[in-house]
Structures are given as C-alpha cells and as structure tokens.
Image 1 (spheres, one colour):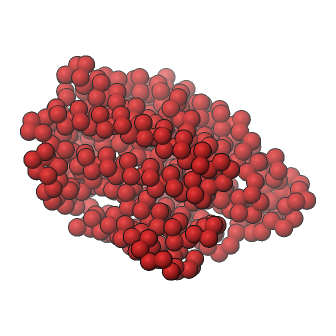
Image 2: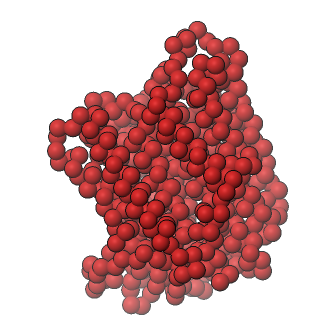
Length: 495
C-alpha cells in the first residue's frame, strides 16, 4: 500500500490544483511542496521496511484489472527501483521549492510538476509491463507542457522536438513489450513472471528484434549517441527546475528500463550483445565530454555532460550483462555502480541545472563569456557550484566517485581496454568543469554584473540539501550500497 500512496498523493495534489482555480503563487507552491514531500516520506518508509536479505521484489500490491489479457495493477520494488525512485522524489521536492518565474500561472505550473512526479514514480514502481508503458509515455506529456509553456528561447520548438523524438522511442518500446507479452504462455504483462521464466532465451531472430526495439527505445530516452540530438536544446530552453527533472529523473528511465526489461528478462540475448552496448556507451562517454568541452553556453555544456555520465551507467549495465564472464563479483560491482551513478547523477546534475536557473533569473543569459569574477559577489553560489562540479568530475569523497569507481572496477575485470579508454572521459570532464568554474567565478567582474545578487534562502536551502546528499553518499555510502547490492546480486546470480 505504501508504494501506491507514493505515486497517488502527487497525482491527487495535481488534480486539486487543476480543479480549483483560486490559488495564489505562495499557496500553490506550498501545496505542491507538501504533496511532493508526502510522496517522498512514503518512499522513505518503504526504504526503512525493505529487507536486503528478502525476496527480489518487496512491498508488492496487486489488483486484478483485465485478467483475460493478463493486465493487473501491480507495484513493487527491488533495491534498484527503490533507490532511484527515492532520489527522484527528493529531486521533485527540490524542483517545486526552488524559486522560478511561473509567468503568472503558478497553479498550472505546479500541477504539471506534481503530475510529472506521479507518473515518473509510476515508471519505477510498477511491476506490470503495460502500466510501465503507460507511465513511461505520460511523462512526455508533463515535460512537454513544462518546456513549451514556461521555457525560454524557442520553447515550443524544443518541446515539440523532445516530444516527437522520445515518443518515437516509446513506440519502439511498445512493440517490444507486445513481443515479450506474446512470447509467454499464458500471456502476461507481469514483470516477475517474465524475469523468472526468461521466455525469449535462445529464440534467435525474434529475441534479437525484441531486444533491438527495447534498446533503441531506451537509448533515445537515456540518451545515447547518436540518438541524443533532442536533449541539448530541450535543456537550454526549459526552466531550471524542469531541466533538473529532465536530467535527474527522466533520463534515468532509459537506464532503469534497460535493467528492468532487457537485462532482467532477456539475459542470454543481452549477454550476446553486451560488448556492442559497452562500445556504444564508451562512445557516449567520450563524445559527451568532448562536445561539452566545446560549449560556450552554460546549460548546453551541462546537458552534454549528462550524455557522458549516462554513458558510464550504460557501460556498467553492459558489463553486468556479460554472463559469459566468470567474474560474477565484478559484474555485480558494475551493476551496483551503474545504479549509484543514476542516484549520484540525479543529485549532482539536478543541483547544476537548478544553479543554471538561478543564473537565468538574475541575468537571462547562459553565455559563459559574459560572466566572471562572481566568487566575491556570490560566495554561496560559487561554493555550491564548485561542489557539484567536483562531484560530477568524480573527486573522491563525493557521490560521483563512488559510482564511477565501481563501474570502472567492474569494467576492468571484464573489458579492461574499455575501462582504460573510458577513464579519458573523466579527464576531459575535469577540464570542462574547471574551465566552466574559471569563466563563471574568477577573473574580473564585468560591469553589467554589478547588481548580481547572492542566493536567496529557498535557493541555498534546496542546494544545501542536495549537496548534503552528495557528500553523504561520497563519505558514507553503505546505506545506499546495502540496498542496491542485495538486488544486483540476485540479478547477476551471485545469490
């Protein structure tokens, strides 16, 4: 019941905002924050009640819906889903509380954010393939309106490109889900049954086509090169909090989907193509870092680092899928690292995009060359940006290092040459973030920035919470690793 509460509460909050027209800015924001926080609290309760030594899926709720075709309302979590869902709920609270110009429509803005939270959590919590697709598709609707109505630049164009591109991926996903559904007798959309029975094991071309459709659909959402072209402009034109959700939550649906569907349900097929997927991930790591280094637009630079970091996640998943390798401990380590990377990237890049929103609210400008010397003018802003940047480039003691160390340690045991080449991505990432910090905060302060203001209370409060999460995971990650390792061990066959 607790998982149902987690996604239903924000949906009810969105309905209340949509149904009753008289909401002031402050009341709408407070209402949305309370609903989002209650959802987060429900997931924290589920975390506390999760037994790492127990079965793979826990807190299961099931209600028959259309039994004749095997559809039911099913929710439940393993450690991987629970970690990503809890991070997502926290990021939604941060995005709602963070100041933003709602353009005189606070009720609609916060209603769409709560709707997006509800369906996003549904993706991570459902155990029914058809419901997974429904939630997965509905996330496009919420983000489409947040970008198109409250964005800047050419928001309608960016929102349309985002929607059409990612909807094409969703249609591929639907075809693959139908293929999985028809592959089992009696037909069922129950993820637990498909994971247990592996119905497409050794079925040749049919399995290959289903796997290809799944991976293409999730690769667009992640996104992987060359299916990434929708992402940079969507980020640049989206409001800061929406960008934080896009990078911190929606991109994770691609990598989470890879773990939950092809990795868990098609183990033999994924093992066959694991090296190919790992090479594609390496391309994303290097390409994302190199292209980010060449960007003069702050938001576009951070957007390309997301492609780089999602490459690390996909690399870990591909290594974990290499079932021909004898080193099960290394594959488990890679899968655990991939999951920690999803959580760490959500917190880190979520904070960076919220910081971008603060820059836009003050200047309406993302060009790095138009800044400089802000370290004395805004020391809090400087401190939070430095922390997030160093976490993103993988400095020890911060969340990014914990994730990347596990991914590369696991990769080195299975595909050592990929690990060696992938480390170059970290070097380039360090260069691009140090260059960004230099251009934003050091040197001479331009005259037009003389009135640049320090972070407001709500801004530094939100960034403080996210930064605390980054530090805690970096210094004492055991609470997170214990949760994830239990599920990753079961998925790779260690226990």
